[in-house]
Length: 107
Length: 113
Image (spheres, rainbow over the protein chains, first blue to last red):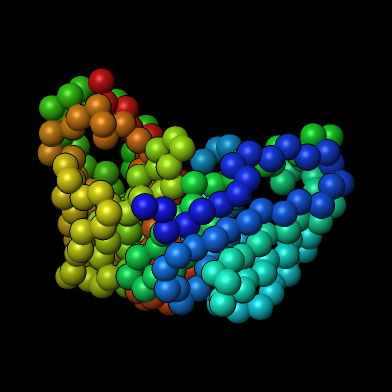
């Protein structure tokens, strides 16, 4: 069973395009996290959300608790945004992770 | 602050060999976690320690043991490595179980032949 589903699995965009990555989950959560994993392998946290919307630079994350759905948007995408984006839900003692969306932004 | 550190970065083992992956954090966090990451699958929890002195099994604990040596350090031991344990292993920590974001180590790439 997959507690967290992400789509799409792979995404290729031209530089400057608006990008959306979606995440749906099936468990009760206290928060939802968006993570970024670069080709070198390191994982960093982008956002932690329990309601509404957060913005950091060109990145925007939204969550709808009732629908158990979150989106990560990247405005004016850039090649340096190329990475794997992972949705993770915080179910208290444990996190559950999506399989990730591999984003490639072409100059 | 170094954050979360892991050693080694890379390791090749033969089937049946044992090894310990080390993890340390310098953020005074209570909770620590071990995950494995395999192609096509999300990160999966092996073991976690909600606080010093406690450890609990996660989703995929078979073949592994852990030790929460002190508040800073959380080690993962493979007693008899198997090819199915070839993976990238990440350690993570957070301030308190159930609250806040996780901070990840750089990962250990393990190959078992």
